[in-house]
Amino acid sequence: MFRGIGLIPNWQKENAAQVVETIKAFFAAYDIPVYIALQEEPDANLPPSITGYQAWGKQVDMAIVLGGDGTILRAARILNATEIPLVGVNMGKKGFLAEIEPQNLIYYLEKLVAGKYQVEKRMMLHSHLIRKNEILNRFVALNDVVISRGPFSRIIRLNTYINNDFLQSYPGDGVIIATPTGSTGYSLSAGGPVVKPTLETLIINPICPHLLHNRAVVVGRDELISVTVQTNNADVFLTIDGQDGLALQYDDTVEISRAAHYTKVATFSGDEFYRLLHKKIL
Image 1 (tube, rainbow, N blue to C red):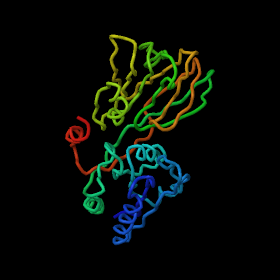
Image 2: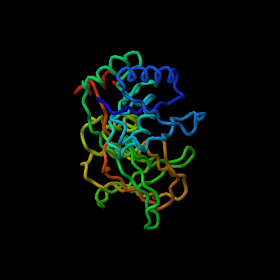
Image 3: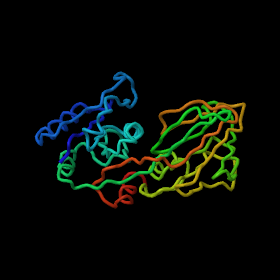
Image 4: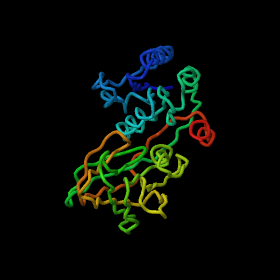
């Protein structure tokens, strides 16, 4: 039985409050406490940041995330070192990361308390920004790390290396470094391959490259990918999971590798990734 359930709602989603009350009432019947993450900016039209979770490592055995994929990605980054499994309730549209639909909520909550679920480990990315030989920022991502041009910029050029061996100088709109989980996100839209999310690989996928022969590259989980900005007349940005980021400068280098921690995801469908892929994407 669970010591406690963490609940991470995106209050901007329609019916979020109603679903929160349903979950609270369900677990109250089993005398399982529910801890609701606070929202720092309740009026912002964005997935909420998560506060009040610092004690969850000793209180919570499962975190239920209410929202779309963006809310789940934010929860995965903030809770990445806690080892708490996540389960998503889809309050958005496609919701590829969220297995539970609100109309089936009680059915899946009953499966949770009965222990009828599996926990998958999803590889995450660690990245850091190097400027003039100094590390300025560090990030973790579940889906992807993207280096791309600004909305009104010219073509940018990004020198890309694998384990310090030169791979390609990509001219175009940018480069996506994705996990298998992220292969069904932005990388897929940019023509990248679909990779089963439980595998451990890194995908290097250029965005609108001005190279006729170019293709995405899939590399091993222990490779180090380095991307250096070789453009000084256009805006270039680093974006983490499509949510966090900052502006880059000429000769900045972003290094990306497998993160030390994994995101754990509770799933009820077993090995049915390809059926889900057909249902939601293909």
